[in-house]
Length: 247
Image (cartoon, rainbow, N blue to C red; front, side):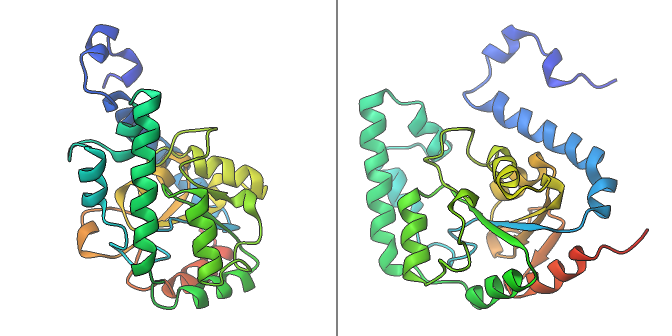
């Protein structure tokens, strides 16, 4: 029988690179969640949709992450947020300011993905609750909703989580989705997580939610329950999931 992560000796865990155990635990939990909840999810009607923001609601590459890494001196093989959180308080504050500055500069180049607003409006008409789970900031969410006139699509701030949320881990953990589902009053199996990168899909799987990837050249290797080339395709997917077919 395969040995679970909890059976690994502590001495072995201590020798692993920073973040390895957390990432491995998330992947292991995700695979268990998918197997255990697959039949349950197929019977659950859809009640909420949670979106990543950068690259999903907005066009890909609006934020220059290489510039962010260069200015904050973050190694290419390190997760940006994990690296920042590992720094001493003073260095962490300085790195956070770099991240914030690059994100602010990127706003000049930020555009919505095609038919984004129409998609959100159609999903709202289906009585679905909509949320955002992003590694951007609260200020970044507020700016995007105001600038693109999407505030009516996301009227409840309880369903909006950024990296400044302190009650759980950021993606690829499913903590944010679990919190949003609780605030929505639904189960995580009644949520569809929509994103453009592996962290979004891992978060959805970790929470036991359905997942959808917005298809881009960079994410051809990412496996999700659904794949769309344009956000508007979500409307048909959601309509089918609202009234799941009997099996």
